[in-house]
Amino acid sequence: LKESGLVGIPLVATNRINTPDVAERILAEGSSDLVSMARPLMADPEFVSKALEGRPDEINTCIACNQACLDHVFLYKRASCLVNPRAGYEKDLTPYKLPTEKRLKLGVVGAGPSGCAFAVTAAQMGHEVTLFDQDSSIGGQFNMAKRIPGKEEFHETLRYFRTMLEKEDVDVRLETAVSFADMQHSPIDKWIIATGVSPRDPKIPGADHPNVLSYIDVLRGNAQVGRKVAIIGAGGIGFDVAEFLLHNNAVDKAVDDVRQEDFWATWGIDPSNKYSGGLVNPLHIPADREIVMMQRKKGKLGAGLGKTTGWIHRATLAKSKAVEMVDGVQYDRIDDHGNLHITTQDGKRVVEVDNIVLCAGQVVRNDLEINGVGTPLEDKIFTIGGAFEAGELDAKRAIDMGTRLALKIHEASTVPGNHKFEAPIGDEERLARLMRRFL
Image (cartoon, rainbow, N blue to C red; front, side, top):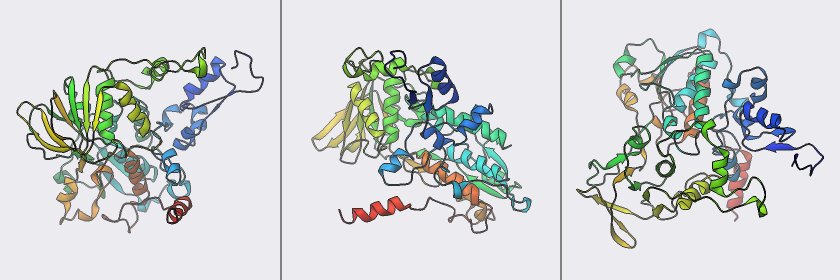
């Protein structure tokens, strides 16, 4: 618009401007006079000051997940932020330095989103925090999520946590497994167990066949997956695995590796505006895999995905023309050839595949908590995140729980079993509930 001279007033560029570099580039190119940001300032209200002070690595970058901002709005909940649960709750969730006598030695087992959120916030409160993880890097489930095409910005959250853990002097001990015996012989005052989840076993006869893989085998273990694939489970993980198998092409990308030209071509966008509406025929690249995605529940697959982003995931898979979605499935058995026998409303069927990937939910990994029952440590062990509550992998809940507990871990009333603190129901949600009674 500036080049064409069609407008003589200042132009403002908006949408997905979430780093200082992107904003500066737009201004330097002369594409616009100003830049506008909304969600990035919920992710980090100090965005501008950190950029001005040369601290871009400390910016908590918006990852465009929409899970706690736009999705909340459509559910009549207060808008907040997955990576920054303080957004909208600044009066309640702002950390402050405790007096010396209230500061604790805290051990956090598990450096996933929940563990990192707790560790950073607790350190900001003045506690002495040691963060353990058996892996060689922090991130937990985010290290799988960042490999999914479209979720490259999860790299930024991990960069933020690495920066803040160092800034707040958290003692990070990677490649370090913690046993219950280690906990018993430690001077730590309280233990936070953020060990996450394990894949749930759907108890299908024959599931021990070598062709059967878990989503962790695929996303973390780089297991070889054949051309024909059955995915059992159609929640967020099932959709992520399908997206990964169709579009990853064995190449992991960071944010800077994603090309806008590829996005334009995929979705039929004409940046030159030569064609009506700025639209052209989308580029279709035939998939090199065939996927059958199934769920036990009857109804639309992916119904539980985010309100503002779920349609994108469904549209992407539908656009590939390589994914068959089947609901109301009974899993009968896996035969000696690794094929899946199912029963649907249309009758019995054999799904002939090279591999079966299990994405059928998770179970908590809380062995350290269980080991503490009946011991002197019982009242000093607090589980958070997936280790507290499995279900879908829910980073929003995990980061929120870790942050809120860190602000109250020093209080005498905060005891195991009474340590999950949640946002109160807001006026908008109360009003919506009241209105539903009369509709």
